[in-house]
Length: 221
Image 1 (cartoon, helix red, strand yellow):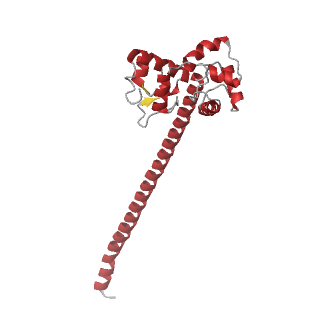
Image 2 (cartoon, rainbow, N blue to C red; image 1 turned 180 degrees about the vertical axis):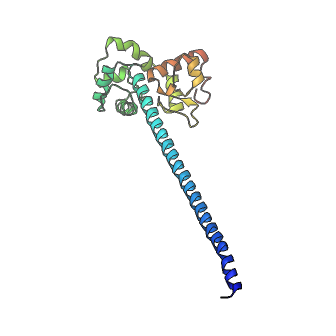
Image 3 (cartoon, rainbow, N blue to C red; image 1 turned 180 degrees about the horizontal axis):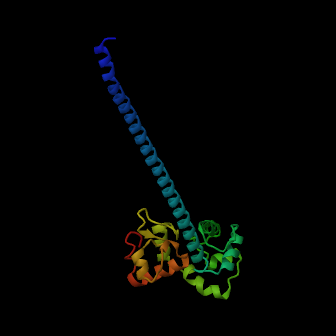
């Protein structure tokens, strides 16, 4: 090997080392970027999982609260729990003492078969046809529901099909008579009209009818 060749060989060693170092640095940099990207992905998955859990928990709590509110409101509206349970037993539905959709549907079917007004309200005539004895304390409470005027019955059928839990598509109008929340509050109501007992809705509608006539129901009055 000549002196020139030896000199060239010595000079190339640092260049090769620099190249190796550069390659190693780039590989390390890529690995670090991959690690950071994976860490971000894991964090997003954890956050999505937590959000999904929170949403699911909130939905369960909301549904439970709604069910409890409905159960708390329904028994005391027009009839006592014992009377409701006796009527449900005669209707052949679960005797839980709560007037819900199934009880109202069974009541309407019974009323149609017996020539009564099929409004789903367990009033005095319906109870008599069922053979259920009404306690003295219930007579006063059932009067508003069972003696609802034909005007209110017509309005209820037109507005909601007589369903006390009905809610309009936009959520603005609620309950058997499709009250707005503001009107409901003005009448002295509390909470959501669609979760109030049917008897309370009947009383509020009668109050509104006396106060303003059929004006609040321009399409159904």
